[in-house]
Image (cartoon, rainbow, N blue to C red):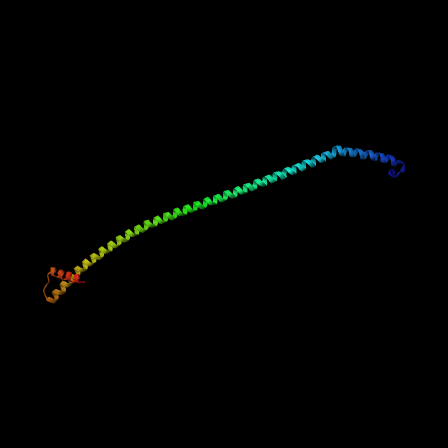
Length: 162
C-alpha cells in the first residue's frame, strides 16, 4: 500500500495541504457566499412572511371587529323593525277591535230595539186578546154582550193600578 510508505509522506502531506487549501479557498469564495446568500434570503423571506402574517392577522382582527359591529348594528335594526311592526300590528288589532266592538254595539242596540218592538207588539196583542177574552167571559156571565169600549176602559183602568 503506497499510503503507508514512509518515503512518500512528505509528498502526500504537500498534496493534502494543496488540496485542502484549494478546497478551502473554493468553499470560502464560491460555496459559502452562495450558501450565506441563500440563508440570508430565506431569513429575509421568513421575516417578510412573519411580518405579512402579523399584518394579515391584524387586518383579520379589524375585519372581525367590523363584522361584529355590523352584526350588532344589524341585530339592533332588526329588533327595531320587529318592535315597530309589532306596534303597528297591535295598533291595527286595537283599531279592528274597536270597529268590531262598535259594530257589535250597533247590532246589540238594533236587536234591543227589535226586541222592544216585539215586546210592545206582543203586549198589544195580549191586551187585545185579554180584552176579547174578558168580553166573552163577561158576556157569558151576564148573558149579554158588553160594548168593546167599556171592556177597554176597564182593562186600561186595571192596567193603571198595577
